[in-house]
Image (cartoon, rainbow, N blue to C red; front, side):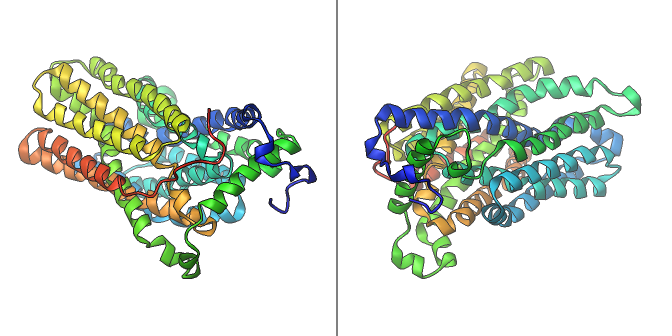
Length: 448
């Protein structure tokens, strides 16, 4: 029991019925998941909207393809470099203040991209977006460990992370409409894009200051007994999931470079390569199936994998929580994604190729939501903030490398087949490595 837990916290987790335990977790989920989902939609939208802006921005600013691509590279360099210090800051100042500040900062940086006049100013602005956005995803993943017992973590992660396929699915239509405002009030369409998609993050940042609570003990929307039940479940998991005492004595750095944390980094690197490929290349991959399709048709077809992904993420996360099994719920969707890339590479039929992309997208995103239930179980409490940020940073090296590798392979072979093979091999390697990840056999408080 923590020092701030009220006197009524003498009640034990075991003394509560399973219905009461579920009711508290559902109450937390209703309070937090929808709100964090909206925040992540805004975050991911501000990350990927430059791709849509590039349809007209490149010509207006006189940018070459290489210069425009470098803007994304610089974003990810800044994103990778700043994730770890950002999570350290969150652990020290609290999620409410830090996440709120990040949203205001990246919203302003993204909005200010409308003032870009050449390649150098675009590079600077995208670096600022990368710096300010870097701490959001690892920060929220850390924040969720303060609120959701492991038995509920997979479904919580899935409901939060469907923001990525959801945003990818609807942003093309939204951004297309905004680009149609070209010339209104003297602004280019891409300038309207950064303005209208950046400012909502600023506004939501101020809402975060008033809406989020750092810990269950501070949540006035939970009564004392609910706070006690939730905190005891989390404390029990923290005690059972600590890193070995001998390793803790060797210090934080030793724990972070331990073999199991390096293994998490490698698995996530393999997984993120496919996530990046889905995010960046899906429209062009779909277009390669039938080059005569209109851009509107390609947009609709490219949304199909995202719809499939949302459904599987929710179902798979719920099933993992109900069975309290993690390892095979991580490995199997990774193998599904690998099979999807292989099907796409070997088939010459457009429908089968699209099915392969659906398998790759659904499998990789479902695996990601399960993956993030595991690292905190292998880290001491003091190392959790840095450890999650380290794993996220190493994995996102894949986000920076994938566009370069796939682009090079496409230029070399004049097609996506070799890129599909590259992604499939990495997913198979990642799945085999995932079999060796430490996973908890049983969670405190079984999910129904």
